[in-house]
Each structure stands twice: as C-alpha cells, then as structure tokens.
Length: 230
Length: 242
Image 1 (tube, rainbow over the protein chains, first blue to last red):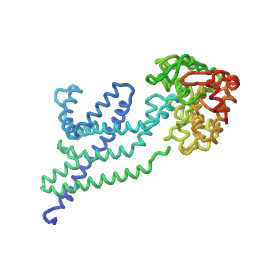
Image 2: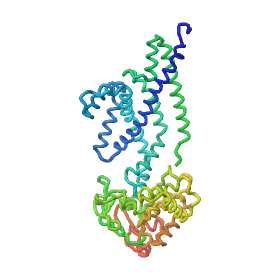
Image 3: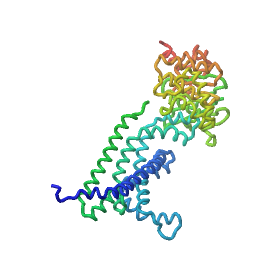
Image 4: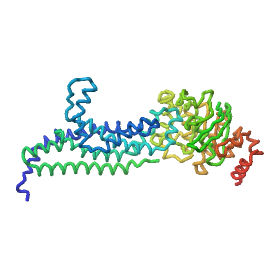
C-alpha cells in the first residue's frame, strides 16, 4: 500500500525539521506566551479599571483582536511593522524586522487579547474582601494586585492559560504564510523540494498531535493537583 | 480619635447611610449594632475609606478620610481592620500573612517582621501554626491570625466588622477573649457585632443603627437599661431573648 511512498525522507530531514523548524516554533510560542500573559494581564487590569477611558481603550483593543482573523493580523503586521518601526525611531526607510520578530510581535499582541479575557475572569474570581484586606493593611493598588490578587488569579487560571498556550502552539504554524521556517514551514520546504507532500504533512500532523495531546493531558493532571485549597 | 460627622452615602439612588455622626475617643471601645442591612458594616468601612461616601466628613487622628489629598494607604496602615470572613491571604503561610504589611508598608526588615509576628502569634496562642496555610486552620484560629495581622502594623485604632458572625458557636469565645484583652489594654476599638455579652463586658458606648441612621448612641448602661427608641428596644428584646 505504501509502495509509492518514501518515508526515509523524514529521517533524512529530521535535523533540519527539529533544529531549525521546531526551535523556531517553540521559541515563538514561549515568547508570545510570556509576552502575551504580561500584556494580557495589564489589559485585564485596564479593563477592570474604574477609570473609564482606560477600560474602553483596553476593551476596544481586545474586541478588535478577537474579531479579526489571525492570518490577516499576521499579514498586516508583517507589512506594517517595518513602517511603524521606522516612524517610531524616525528612520526614512522602513526598518527590517524579519519574519521571526514580526511573528513574535504579532502573536504577542494577538494572544494578549485572549490571555486578557482569561486573566480578567481570574481577577474577578478573587473576592472583594481580599482586595479590602490588602488595602486595609496599607498596601497600595499595585502592591495589592502584585502580592494578593494576581498570584491567586494566576493560580486559579493556570490550566486555562496553558490550554490557550497549546492553541497558540498550533496557531504558530500560520507563520508559514510569511515564509518563516517554523516546523510546518520547514517540512513544507522539504516536501516541495523532494516532492514528498503526503509523507511530510502526515509526519507534521503526527508530531503536532503528539505534542499537543501530551501537553493537554499534563494540563489535566495539573488541574486536579492545584485545585485551590480554600 | 475617630470622628464621623454628618456622613451620608448612596448606592445609586438608594441611601445606605443617612447623616451619621458619632465619635470614638482614644482608648474607647464602641460597639455598633443593629439589624442586618442597617448600614453598620458600610459605616465602619467608610472609616478607613474602603467604601467611599458622598457627604459629610470622617477624620482619623485628625486626618480627613474623604480628602482626595490624603495618603490613604498610609492612613489605612495605622488603622487595623478585622473582617467577618477573616480575609487571610490563602496563598501565604500564617507567618507570611503577618509579615507582608510590615515589610511592604512599614519597611521593616524580614527579621524584625518575623520577630514581631512570633510575638503576636504567642499572644493569640497560635505559635505552633506559624507555617500552616489559612485553609489548614479552624475559623476561630483564622480570625485570631487576622487580629494578629492587624496588630502587626501597630495600629492606633482597630475596626472589627462582625468578627464572630461567620464562626461556629464554640469558636466565638476564643476570638472574643482576644478582643476583650485588647480592650482592657486600652486599644481604641470600633466593633460591629451582635455579641451583647462582649458589649456589656468592655464597651463604653453602644451605637444602634437602623435603615442607615444612628438611632441610638448611648453609654452602655443606659443602652441596656433603658433604650430610648422603640426600634432599639425591639431589637434588644429579640436578640437577648434566649
């Protein structure tokens, strides 16, 4: 049945696929996750702020990002970021950002909107009394957030944040549209060069499945363990 | 020490506090009681600005609480507060609960804060539990930690918002004992509670509130002897019945 296929191509290209491709994918995922969580948490705090302009601004941003297809945002940023960068530093020529950093910025900004909604739910899950008791001790807003509300919100939300990160890990494959060499991009290049499309794409699917499924099982186990003691 | 004059507060169009005025002198213990929804918890939360109010003035040690220029964190750090539901930080050990404010707000060193914390834990008889987390303690123990936490800031006055109403009956006394001791040492205290035994033992004055108003503000003996208002009489007859 598999007589027409050459699965050796996978073995031959393993170093390239993992050393170049998977490294790109994992680095991008980690950067977008950490950047997205930090930025998303700030957005969540803005959204919950009693200062209306702040919450409107953050709300508008989140709704915009969540209403636009990711693929479009990737393209849009890829072509726009060089000009924005040039405008910011005052250069005449559009600056060269490169596919990796363009993607890193895009995913951070895009994922922040989703992490924001998760952190918002997390912050709202902490009772008013906790905030009061922080204030009553004399802590200011940032101290109360940093020492009391966010650590608890974060702990409550870890499983959801990780689940979102697994989705992010899969979504990073979209960067192949800007010719970045992520895991899928690397496989795609080999597939086209050697005309081994079925073999390579099947292999890629299996790898994505194994990684994502394993991670989601880990998240599930974690969820049972950290069910917050109250 | 604490002076409340003509304070009114609204939630939208609903008035929760109406023209409340009273005072708590240095070293005085004042008990605030009244039916639920009468505004007593709201009033006590206005004292350290956890709840904003729209009219009137509250001063603590001469500093106006409602003034936007007031450094609220600093003011609050000098007023201890104990809540109905303890509100210990569940992600921190008992000792961390006791040292957080001392280190972050008062700028004490970690060692100093721990020493102070140990002293206070000894006082509320919980030294053995210093490394436990709040969820591992009983309600009564948690509330005693909460009192110790408030005392760790060396407050000039203490506010208690129904400190025993979330406790199982057999744990109420261990908390009240700590409070009685505090009162006898001369701590300035404003206590929202239904524990009339406590009021009888240590309060100097009792304030009775109903529908956002201070209906009765009398010396303890006058209040328990002959409350002037019918509403207070009815309230007392109901809760002292059993």
